[in-house]
Length: 196
View 1 (tube, helix red, strand yellow):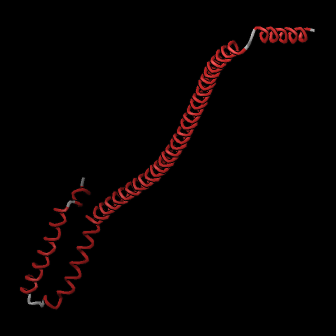
View 2 (spheres, one colour):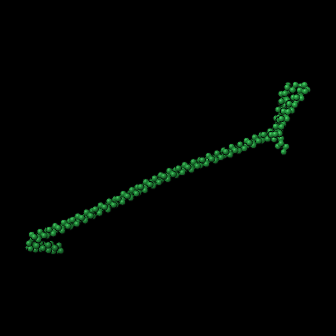
View 3 (cartoon, rainbow, N blue to C red):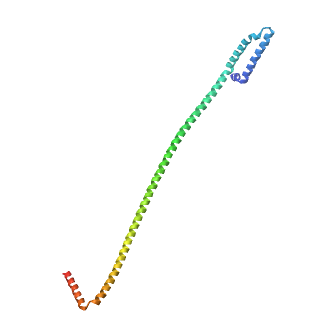
C-alpha cells in the first residue's frame, strides 16, 4: 500500500513542489545570513536534481518503467496478434485463390465437355437425319420404280390386249377356214413335239 502511494503521480508532484520550495527557502535563508546563494546555485541545483532523480528512482521509476514495459508488451502482443491474423488471412486468401482457380478450371472443363457433347449430339442428329432422308429417298425411288413398272405393265398389257384383239380381228377377216385348220395343225404338232 505504501509503495502504491509512493508511486502515485500526485505524490510525485508534491515531492517536486516541496523540493522547489526548499530550494527557494534556502536561497532566502542564505540571503539573511549574508551568504551569496547565487554562487552556490549550480551546486544546489545539482543537489536538487540528484535528489529529484533519487526520489524519482525510489518512488516512481519502477512504476514508470513497469507501465512502459506493460504498454510495450501489450503493443507487442497486439502486433503479434495482428501479424498472426495477417498470416491467417494471407493463408486463407491463398486457399481461396486455389479454390477459385480449381473452380475456374472445373468450369472450363465442364464447358468444354458440354461443347463436345453438343457437337457429338449435333453430329448424331445430322447423321440420323441424313439416314432417314436417304431411307425416305430410297423408299420413294422404290415406290416410283414400282409405280412405273406397274404402269408399264398395265400399259403393255393393255397394248398387248389391243394388239391381240386387233390381230385376231384382222386374222379372222383375212384367214379362211383352211388357213385356220392349218394353223391348228401346226400348233398341235408343236405341242406333241414338246411332250415327246
